[in-house]
Amino acid sequence: MGCNTYKLNELLDRLIINQLKIFKKKDPNDSHIRSLNNIVNSIDKRINDRSSILTVDVIDYIYTLVYVNSEIWNLRDQMINENGQFNEHMKKSHQLNALRNLLKINIEATLGSRNVKGLDISNYDMEDLKGWNINTLNKL
Image (tube, rainbow, N blue to C red; front, side):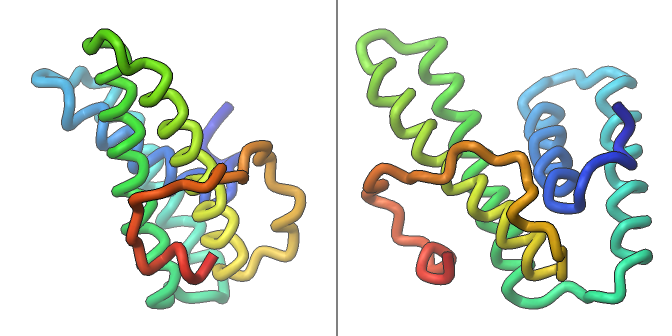
């Protein structure tokens, strides 16, 4: 499935995740770089095709999405490398994934999508996520 079939919120999420993968690898291969370039080109095309513009809210959502994705990947690494706290890390990862999904919905809605309810997102319950004092949470 090519990048052109994804909504802008999904492309932004894929961009962040791909950049995290490249950052975590000491020697990224050409396929990672090509994938990143394809995503960037698709995002650029989507932004140019839309009549909407980036707002402070969208930038805030994207910034928070970067942080949340980074934290999810860190928890993933901890689940693999640490003994004894797998369940706690898994629960927090699940909660953060719900926040990630809400951020993606809000990015698409703020950019003017008329079909926000049609987004394929199953997890949006943060299950009483504690310890995250992010201003963006007050907007969701």
